[in-house]
Image (cartoon, rainbow, N blue to C red; front, side):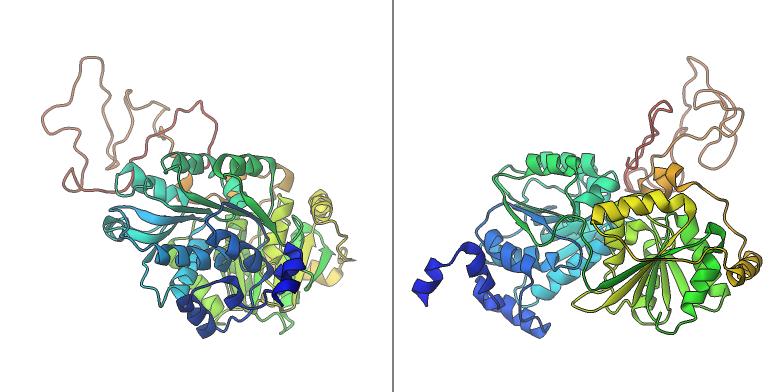
Length: 496
């Protein structure tokens, strides 16, 4: 048998690795996998785990739902356990950067499940929650930290987190990091790390900017790929319904009249649109909730938990949640509005047909979205079956009723959509607001933090004793990162 295996190519030998035990994983990891019912590795796991165990840099091209998390989590945990040492104070041995809160939480949960018999610490930090508990967890050092870039940079600025001791750096969903404007923060974070580290880079697609970033971070990487870029899952039944924009809501309600739409994710282009669609569905007697970047962490967690528990049939989401939602048995994905970025379509419909199951993806397409549909079909190299529901008299009558239930949103041309429409509020640049005649901080007529009218100061006028003190407690109390207003002349940026 040994001689026969020695004559096989690397690809052929890989096909013989059908069990996790064949990949060289330690017994505590194999025990945890067995307890979760995992027996055979996915293709990305079979290719990536041996490479990561050898300490090599890795460039992984794999779409969502292929088992990427275990592909890097399992070998990372084994490497940390084999070279057990205390994590540095306010530091961590492994850093995983994730674009969204939900995805960061899911990655950390997987790490914890795999490390249940290993005694390694795993924590998450992300925006939308208080700093205190995160600072306390960071103070003593952590083996594995899963973080969103914005909140990590806040902690680094306040000296409550240090990346200098990172041994293994993982960048997950790199292309979505690009979409959200996180490439510059990633470069800043990486610049403060030790050069002697292992780098793992995962992305579903490889646009030019992401390829450039990979070239900067990776050293002689091994590349693994399990699917061509921007391809959709074969088990998803896709279809397009041509429909007038003002009749999308009654068409949505018509679909939900079918009881087979038991657990459905509806994607919209904007946060306001997600709220309006959810409100309409509830008015039509269909349990629904919306989830997007402007929701608090508590609201997002409650909506997702209710959806997972089957307490509601529909979850209405924007693209920022497309890769952060990992729910079993999603029966349908509905693109209420087509995405501006073709690759986002792949990630949206990838919420269904997971773990070998079948799924259905339905996309509404108005006349002004036909170019977006062409871009999607070009990127995915397929023609999606289409059906024409325009000029439907029943839908026209239902649209009038829908407008009474929930007034229609003001029309916005998707080709001229504001790129800020799905950036979380905590990532927006804070600008000074002149509320009285357009005068700034040094002129008269502005307002202070308490809402009282502030008097302007001329040259030579200083602050009296006790003036200039911020209201609300001791001056040395940490109240989160300090934000400075950007000059008005600069163009908008999605991050501070």
